[in-house]
Length: 551
Image (cartoon, rainbow, N blue to C red; front, side, top):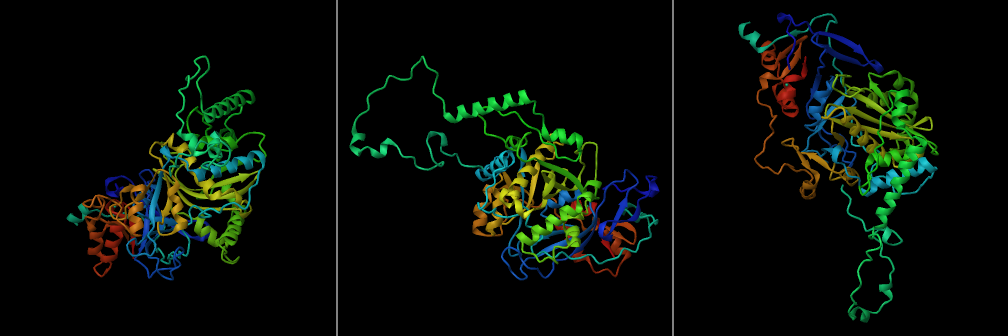
């Protein structure tokens, strides 16, 4: 990280306090050279363990954690690519080879996504509800009510209790090594349902069932072949698809049905854009086509997805805060059986509204900018669900999803995940590097968390070499052992492993300096083991770029 050096005339980095919601002090260093985003952390060594929300072990869930006072989106991108994940301002990494239920970071390739049969059923159910008002209750329950349930279950993050006694206007000194010398699920092919009546894959009654086995001994007579004067035979499925395509095109031309999402985004710039692709004959229906079918004028219900920045909160977020919180409270009480005094406004703010990620709006980034957001699902003028997401340089990271329990029949956990994948696809058209959808953690040993593998194609992160491995290659290993080195190359190593502890960047007494200089200035410090553990977990690049706060 190229820090501005005052002696070189590149400006001074100043430290100041910014007070966020809930009067939580957030420390930021504003670099004069372009106000470059920085990261300031406090690291906690492995704790004694806490209750596991999956296997229900009393203290078997082990992890390492950091309190992030402020964080750049690039640093967080690099951290989640090493198995870290945030819960509010707390960033944690499971101790994979010691914890009871190893949690593997999972991501989906949005450019090649293939819809599973269950995903299509959820999309069709939503289309029927929006277009016709059809309500189907009493169906199968989602594998997990929230598709991001892996954070917050029994997880008690370490609260930050330290106080930064730093003068507001005091310049932060930059000490370099050079200066001291002189003084960082693809669905299986289904039987053609149009070839007979009944459910797909069900055996259909035919003439053959009433014919004795002796009739099969008769040698069939040669036929005359196809009639050349008639058009060639075609599958009923292809004919039906062509008719539907023709009807959709005619409807678009006659009624001039414009892009619903883009129209509302003109009136409301915070509405999530969604293009309506033109269907192609003889091609599987895409995710965007499924979603666009339900967004038509004259439907029984109107659904709109709005994107509001949650940190720092914009005016739209503030205006809808109470409505969103009440839905969260109802969700926690109905789905997770929380008592009313647990799902407090303070807990909601700390857990899902506060974020260490700085809002960044580079010219080559998405229109919304990078950072933390809430995606609000508005049905007929009221919020029914909220998806908490982080927009990062290479992905959208799903944080949490909560919804009005009255609409649980719509499978909103799965539907919101599909909408977030579609949103990522839209962003990728203007930001080519943003091409992944991160779903949090995949827990193979927990049946209700294995469903994340149905989003195809997906990768799991190797916990030792931090390379991505297709999930199909991981299942056999994880069936044999809940913890596994997923990388098939036995000789591969972590390319970003710690190589030089002395270059780890620390913040000590308002001064940014390498750890080697810190050790010289603070000879009483006995923290080398903790700093080494921290740097090993975040990697050499981040260790040299982020600021580790030292007392």
